[in-house]
Length: 259
Image (cartoon, rainbow, N blue to C red):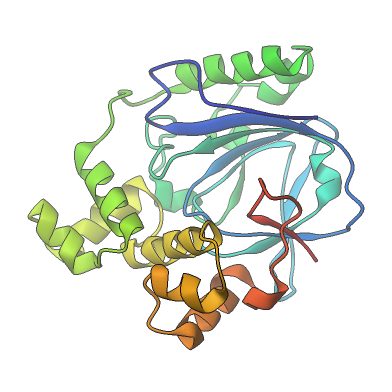
């Protein structure tokens, strides 16, 4: 079962791109999770645990079954066994800012237990009691609205910066568009979005590449890489593999790659 939906609440729509529930079994033991430059709230209903493994070895990040995966700008390995029954909230860039007191930079590339961010929320237990996926997703929306610690008002400047960088504008061009210095843009962007502007722009270019059709050389040119060699270097660093090895687990799950 795979259910994904846009938020029903108009107040959440500027901050949340989708909510969903996934239930099933996967034959592979590990998969790469590719960076998107955004954060996710994850709730594992099958077991009270979540893990993220560095792609080059080393210790895993571990958290109980409800956690925030902060804005991520690098790939990680995850265990599909932890997605046998999982709920998620996919935030837009900068979308976590109204819901968590800490700046987005404090959770960047980290798996943070939700109880540390929302003490006493008991979200996983409440979701497990909700019953159907529809009821669980409705509860998730209510929990987000209740947890808001800042006004649910989008920041226009952050929106301009996100759209500009995501389209391929440079940090200097984006700062100039806002009438800021590059340093001022970086400070505001890291606080609201979590990643440095240049890293965010690179990650979003990778996402444009994955969404583009055609051969790799044509896709590289269309997405603003200097040449195919540049694209391959960026792909290896940001996706943890070569383009020729990229094979997502389904056409609708471009950022999940079995290994």
